[in-house]
Length: 589
Image 1 (tube, rainbow, N blue to C red):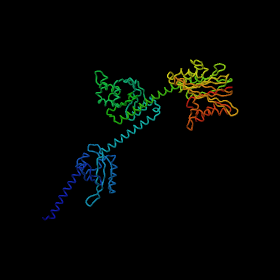
Image 2: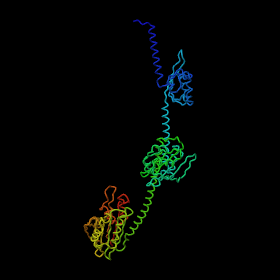
Image 3: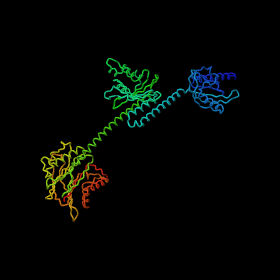
Image 4: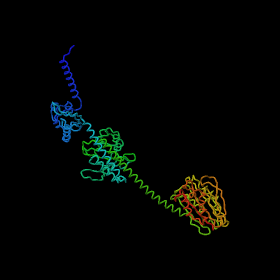
């Protein structure tokens, strides 16, 4: 078969025509807006997407001025982009608004490409645009949301860092909350309502109210609102928009239960009518205290079209939480002040008690037998007590006791034992016989009858005629007897005796002892609080080391009890002892 040249040419033209129609069909059905404009901004050609997006007919767009529909604020930018593209031969990407046929504006993002002039046409600009109105709307809403959240965050920071909030000043702190609530959410007024009795909920009192009517002014309201159903509403709904949310609460079972023979609608309408005027929109957020709704924040506006967003609801709830913190802080502060007052009273009473206990301790002897003592309770009241007195002309009683623990109970027990021994009122106990005294004490002061308290005691009787001291101990450190010896230094004797703590057991475990007391000898009786002290090295001072302090001071000439305490404090590393500390010194002339 032979095909002539004319036939080939005609076939090529038919193929090209089909391709152009296909290309035109594709271009007219894509979403992008494509236009060709001249140097004056007139449309030489545009696809059908222009008509679909902007609402104009294809005939009205053909040859029209593309700058006419541009938003006046964006026109200078678009004109400058057109001029720069035609001048430089390079298109630009810009965003601008074009007026829709209905009057609103459509956001477009456009990219231009310059077609250089040829022999049969002038320079043209191909512009491909897409509708970005949804994106712009989203960006604007995001920017608005960011601005709202930023205002809310600044408001909350201002509230939390305010002096009134920090010091839990409910009156002025709530004023700040209401002020920022109104200003941030652009409402006309805001109020704080508080349940009059959190145990008997249902009656609310308006504590504070703020109005923004051109001139800010505060007022305290005495309005009272009663609604047994409102606490149940607040428990089930953190934030309530009134009256809008009431439509969803129409079948509220709580309201039905509270109104015999009625539904929940009268309950909701009553709350709405009391809290906001007719036609107003309100937002109510529960204020919780002690695990219960104790009140609510209320903001309201006369704007009947107002719809509270989730972010505004959350902000109102957050400020309600701040009010809860404010009320809880006030409660804690009131409790602390009451505790401080109570503590002050207790401290004064303890000081009186400590003064009384000290007044019961003995007056020093200054005759042939001389005494000195120190009494250092670790707290206001301690469990130590000591005494010495002449039973008769020849017999001197000496004792020091230590009740376990500190405080009022230990001090009372120690003082009662002191008086019992001093007044010689101990049943079945011979004051001249140390073992007999401890046995009688153990029978009278069993721990299960005296608050589980036990005590230690060292008890001695000095016979001035024979120069012998008889002694016994119950769980107490031994006394130290230091006698002069001109040849090899002082003679040291530990007066040790066996026996468990008084009250620890009903068994009679006490064994006494005796020693000869030389002239100018010194006897030291003390509690374990003087040597059971920690040191910088770690271990306790210990009995032997403490005894060496007494021996060294005796060898130097005199045992000054203040020096004894000072040296123990130095080794301990503190002048605060960890337990009650008492020491009694008796010099036999």
